[in-house]
Length: 486
Image (cartoon, rainbow, N blue to C red; front, side):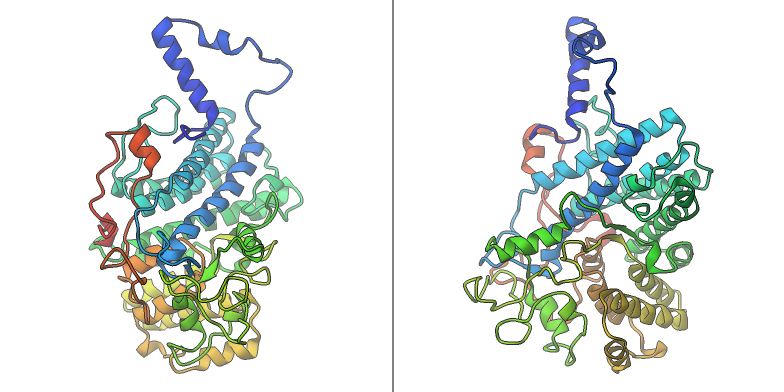
């Protein structure tokens, strides 16, 4: 499997077949048909592929967040000077391969949709490709894409990151266009892990899930358009237009709720309980929410983690490692009672509260303070409601002068602070941290950090250096900024 850098194994087989044709002139199809059973399908059904790619895209969100969560200091390693904590050049070959495996399957879904003339499946494939590709390029910058998914090139070249950003926007537009057409192939709702599991039949999928897929595409479009806030090309009006077509409530969000076993964050929590230490919370996020830094407690913290044996909330400083043994409950970590880390917890891809914070930021940049403040309060309220915070505690938090600042006193830094809490364990939080130059209250470099500035990008995986040598760009330093982070 280590050589399947960009393709599923069936794509490698197809590529090998091409090479055999070139070298020997043999009939590859005949060769592959020797043991083919004509009564058994040789490719997955289109709805089978849909189930695979929707669930695995959700898992890719987890995989990205399980890297970037350390960089925004949601998470901290329980081991001192852990490479991820201290900005070392970590080899994320496994995550890279899994992301490309999912993108290869999304490509297959697209090809089957074209073959069967299925507008709904084609539209979804475009949106899923944008989800995965944007995560990939936001972590690594230039990555293989145009030559990487067909199975015909084992050493694909790298596409320019800025062009890939534009490609993601185009994919979303194409997806919206296809989904606005009446479906031409029956959709199995249970195969759509983003928007379909609760729907009973294809008619309900067509009337509900298809619209929610369009809303998800606009939500992703709003996220991407807002990502370039540092550049002259930033267009607040375009961001707000996308937000207006995105979610109007939490029921429309893109989330995965069905798993082979459990939510992957729950596996982290269970492993931790079994003394495979992981999922420890950073002192940065804990001290922001327990009252240490801001002077008031956040009622969402008990919905994220556990009380320590001291009856309070204590995080682990990044780079310092745990204080206790790991078995005596000295610090906070992900637990099965947490909203994000319960066995059946949803795995969020895009949320209503994120859209409200995007709206708040874009409206403020567009000199619309009243709209900005309304959206800002709505984002906090939605997130607290989602986590099950009592109405009295929620309202008391909103009434604090540091939170309920009023439209005339709302600033980008206040919006960024509250969005940081609302995007807990989401990869987009690292995009935001870089956009705002890590301007979070009390943020500090990890202990024993190898860099003098916060990390801005990942190094290319070792598998790329060995299997695709000569193509990966040279990474000078992990503080080098991606094109949108200048």
